[in-house]
Image 1 (tube, one colour):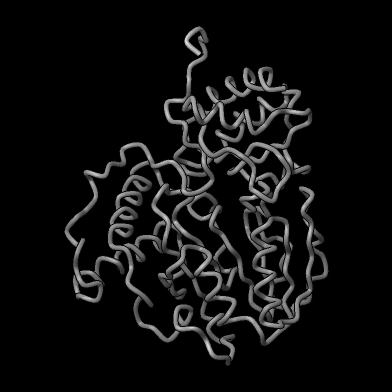
Image 2 (cartoon, one colour):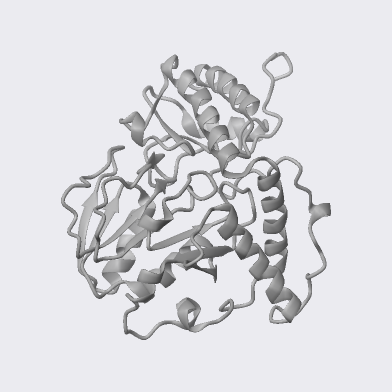
Length: 356
């Protein structure tokens, strides 16, 4: 290692979530005012509502839409949506990543009628002839496969069913077409680099008219609560506030999208000249700008590769999702620096030769 002249990334954190903290973030800058306080005190409720209002403003969520804070990150938020809003109509579930598979299991546990369209080979399943009466369910960006739907041009204008999307890896990156989505869920542990634990549900006026009648576990019964269901982590909310400050200071959505595109371009140009890896997603138009998932074209001792990169503080947590094909999964979100990605690719070139 001492004889190698390759510069290491200044920060080896390329995990797909929780992700690298934004530059300028510090534990010392956490607002400690509300720590150790009763979460239903007036000041605390105001503090939490302020952060949710900031999210609405930053993401340009329509004023008529409601926003709810949930326990259990994106998973808790999506479980709540499934229990509260699915069941009146047949559901068309579009699946191209492994989280979509997990949500499908939950739909089936409730014995719901599902039209499943699934493809896990790096291509999108068919988006044609989706019945207008059906509810529609999809993950915007598949973090496990690096594939993204990117736009909702395939949707008909006058849908009777509701459109539900997991936008965790798209929120704070894409300019989401909110008026085409009736229900969206996300956590802030991805693009913002904030801590996990809490999830968010964004609900359109139309969605509230689709509430089903079934017994709901209290932890998911967000529509009957005028505040958070269980005790929130005020440390996490304070961390969110700092990350939102940095996000806005850096230029918000416009800058975020620009950084992600430039970061992905670094990986794309490297892959074009590399003989060991290829993007898992066949159609470039459906490749997510974050994350990028690459599969091996040649045999690599990948477990030794990942251990070497981690042990030498070159790259943490870039191994493929546990159910996916062996490969490299790199978060290229707005907190990741271009020069760190360049340094990473240089080390990957060196490592491929060492561990082939």
